[in-house]
Amino acid sequence: MREAVVVSYARTGLAKAARGGFNNTSNMAILAHAIEHAVKRSKTDPKEVEDVVAGCVAASGNVARGAALMAGLPITTSGATINRACSSGLNAIAVAARYITEEGANVVVGSGVDSITFQGGGGGGKEPKIVDMYPDYWMPMIDTADVVAQRYGISREYQDEYSLESQRRMAAAQQAGKFKDEIVPMKTKMKVVNKETKEESIVDYEVNRDECNRPDTTLEGLSKLAPVKGPDKFVTAGNASQLSDGAAAVVLMEAKEAEKRGLQPLGAFKGWAVAGCKPDEMGIGPVFAVPRLLERHGLKVSDIDLWELNEAFASQCLYSRDKLGIDPAKYNVNGGSIAIGHPFGMTGARLSGHVLMEGKRRGAKKVVVTMCIGGGMGGAGLFEVY
Image (cartoon, rainbow, N blue to C red; front, side, top):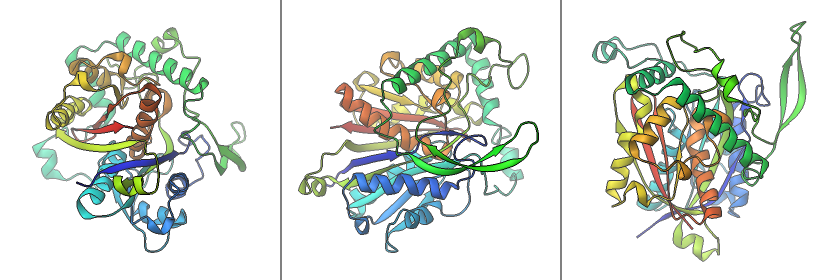
C-alpha cells in the first residue's frame, strides 16, 4: 500500500498586508521562494517533482504553475491552484498526497500562498439564485464571527483573554526560536509611504521573521478596542486574525521512495475530511469536520496529541475548541493566526508543516490541523509524526 510522507517544509515569514515587507511582491514570487527551498531541503532533484499543488484565495490564474517555474522546477513539472477558502493550503496537501497514493507519483509539492496586499481575481458578482436559497452565503466572515459569539454566548471578555494567550504563546515561541527552522528569509523591494508627504519610495528589505504579532499586548489594551461592526458586536482588531502575506510549501514523497533515499520524513499524511454547516456560522466548521475525520480513522479527540485549529476569529475557535473537548494544553501551543497572521491560502500549509515540527519536538504521534472555511464549511487533516 502506497503512503505519502512529508520529507521537507519551508515557508516565508508573515508580513503585514499593505504595510509589510511583501507589499511590492507578487504572490507567485512569494510562493516560488517557499517551493524552491522546500525542494532544496528535501534533497530532491527538481526534475523529479511531478506536480505542484497550491492553495490560493486572493488571486486569479494558476499561481502554482508559474511559481513552480519561478522556483527553478523544469517545464515538465505541472501545477494546479485550488481554492477552498481558508483551508486551501491543507486541501492542496491532501490533493498532492492522493496523487502519490492513488495515481503513482513519487514526488509532489503541496503548498499555499496569499498576498492580501494584492487581492485579485474577481468573483464575478453574486449569483441571485444562491442568494435566494441561502441569503447568508456571502455574509462577510467578520459578521459570521459576531453571529457565533452572539448565538453561542462567547463573551467579549473570553475572546480577548484567548487572544492575549495567542499573542503570549506566539511571542514565547518566537523568543525560543521555534519558527527559525521553518522560515527561509526572502529579499524584497518594499514600498514605503511617507506619512506626512504621502510620497512613495521603494527600499531594499528582507522578510526573515513573522512581523504581525504584538508581544506587548495586554488585556486592558484589548478591552479598549472598539468592535468593528458597532458597540453591540464582538470582533475587534485584537481578537481576529491579521491580514498578512506569505507562503508555505511541503514536499511529499512516497514512503518507500523516501526510505530508499535514506530520508527522514517529518511524518505522514493520513487523511482529510470536510463538512458543511450554516453559512452564517461558518466559523464552527471544525465541529463537523473533525468528528468525521476521526471516525473514519477509528480515533477519539483524546487520541490526538497536538492540535492546530486556525484562529480566524477568537469566537469561532473558542466555540470549536470547547465543543470538541480539546485540551487547551494541546491546542495551538505556539499561538495562532490572531498573533501570527492569516494569508488565507497559505495557513493550512503553514499549520501542517508547523504541527509536524512541533510534534517532533514534543514526541507527539497523531496530530490534527483543522479550520473553518468561508461559505459554511470545515476542513480537517490527520498526520502521523515520525
